[in-house]
Image 1 (cartoon, helix red, strand yellow):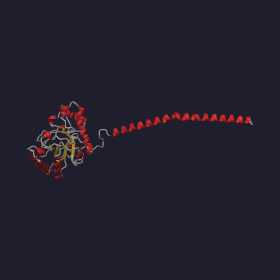
Image 2: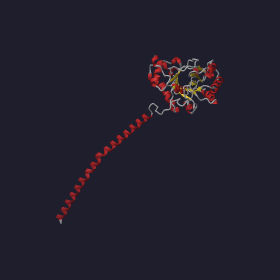
Image 3: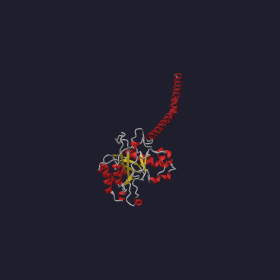
Image 4: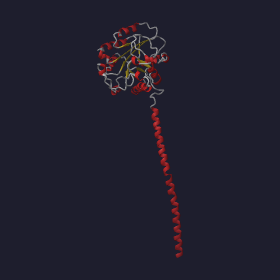
Length: 322
C-alpha cells in the first residue's frame, strides 16, 4: 500500500510539472506579438490621415478644372462674319449706389452689365476720400444676391496701385487672382476680365505681363476715354469709349448708332456708382440705360462676353511692344 501511494504521488507531481511547462509557452507566445498589431494599426491610421490630406489638397487646387465655367461663354451670340456694333456697360467698386443702377437696369430688362468688385474691401467706407457716400457692400450683402443675373468681374482684392508693386510678382498675382477665386466661390463662374485699380496712370506693360503669365485674367480695362468705336488692339489694356459722367455721352452714343457698320465696332462705357451722387445724375443715367436697352442694330454684351467673342482674334497682350 505504501509503495502504491508513493508511486501515485510521484506520477501526480510529474503530471503537474508537465502541465505547468505546457501552459508557460502560450503566455509568452501571446505576449510577444501584442506590439505588432498596435504598430500596424497606428501605421494604417497615419496612412489614412495622409491620404485624406492629399485628397483635400487635390480638391482645392487652383479652384478650376476642365469643367470650370468661365464668364461670358454663354452669350448666345454667333459671329457669322457680318460686322456688328457691340456695346458694353460696366461699373466699378460695388458701392451702395449700385442698388439704384441695378433697379434701373431691371426696369428695362437690361442685364448685360458688368460690375467690378474688390472682395478684400467688403463693407469699407471711402466716403471721406471721395466727398460723397462711397460705402462698399458687405460680404453678406453681396452673398444675398444683389448682383444675381449680372456679370461680376475683378477689380483686384484691395484696389491697390499695382504699379508700386510691379516688381513683386507674387503680390500682384495675389491681388488679381485671389479676387478672381473669391468671385468664383461666390458665383460658380470664373472671371476672365478686370478693371485696373486706379486706371491708366497705374497700368504698366510689366503689370500686363504679370497678369497674363500668372492669372486667369485676359482683359483689363483702363479709364481714358477715346470717343472712338475701334476694337482694342490688345485686351489687357482696353481703353473705353466714354465715361457715364462725360458731357458727350449721349452724342457719342448717337454717333455710334448712326455710323455705317462696315466692320465690327465697340462702344465701351464705364463709371462709378458714387458719381451719380457727385453730379446728381441718376435721371441722366436712367435715360441713357433706357436709350441703350431700346436701341436697335446693336449687340448688348457684358465685358466678359465681349472678350469671349473676340479672344481668338485680339491678343491679351502684345509682349513684343515692351
